[in-house]
Image (cartoon, rainbow, N blue to C red; front, side, top):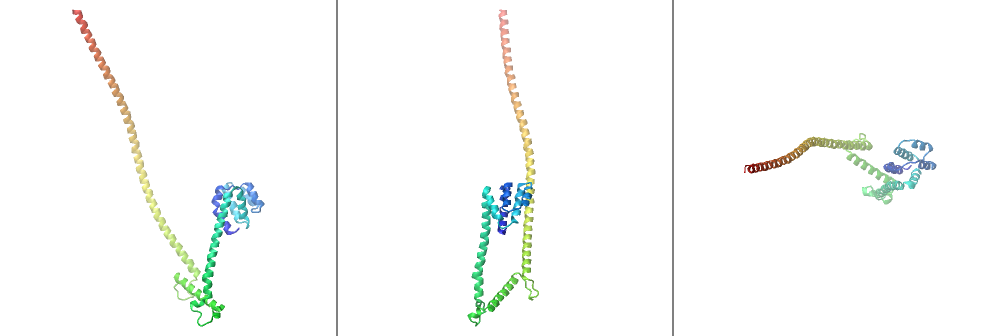
Length: 277
């Protein structure tokens, strides 16, 4: 399978794991097209989980022939058209990206490298030579050799390889590798510094959260106690109201009894007066 097709499958793997179900019918269809073997199909179908089956199938497809991607994409079109379109779109993106790189490379060759080879007199190589001498392969090779020497010098200068003796200088590939390792090391150190700072900030935030949590727990306990007190107060207020009502009732009954007693006394006095007369 083409590397771009493999990358397209990798980019669509999450969508395939989410939506695609490799049914026995689908697997037999791939097997009939010689995309996978019967042994592969049996191994995949014996896997317990659907996601595991999908992952295993994609790994098998990436090891198969040049038609595996196209056939798989066409089979998906029947029941999973959106996945088929996704695969096709990702492949087109990868291909267009490579074409763009190729176009830029050709542009550099045609407009920068070729003019340098055809016009070596720009670097003072022509002298009194005629045009035919300038186009001579030996002149062009000499010019390219000088360019390579200049390039080597500039690379060593950029990479800080200041040893004067050519024999003592390290190869450019070694210098580039060391430079990349240094850049990677510096990036890792900066990353670790940033990570340490983030961890420190997170610890501080966690400490603040725990502090606020403790305060919240205390406030909740206070609120709970206040609620209990409010319940007791409401109960006391109800009892007080009931007692007042009972008191008013007793006072009213007392007044009624006093009135009744006075009436009885008046009646007794009236009756006694009648008896004496």
